[in-house]
Length: 162
Image (cartoon, rainbow, N blue to C red):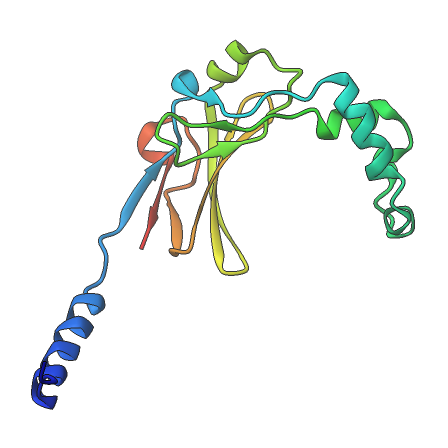
């Protein structure tokens, strides 16, 4: 089989560059309605929490880096680690709410604010809900919040990602 001509390869490369150079449309994100949110993972059992408490808190490095306050007692550790993964209905946002919250309380929470911040190469769009629940969307796109970021009105509770 003969090799393609150089001019054919150059044209093909130009077409590929043109296709990939087309800017993507901006994606609008709104804080999800948690009525359809669902748990993805199960809450840890008390036995699992006690087992991981021993492993997490026996790490000597943690004791000397100033972050060992959750290891002072099991109740503090339980407040930190007794969480389960939840997703919005479309899977775009996720959160780790406390297992102490009833599922109906999570599903009934109302959005209060939206924010966008850069963390390394990722942008996090965070929707904060009543009860301290925070659902997060992570993307490599640059995102900005429309308006003041308060969710009293639906149009104020949006972000646009380029």
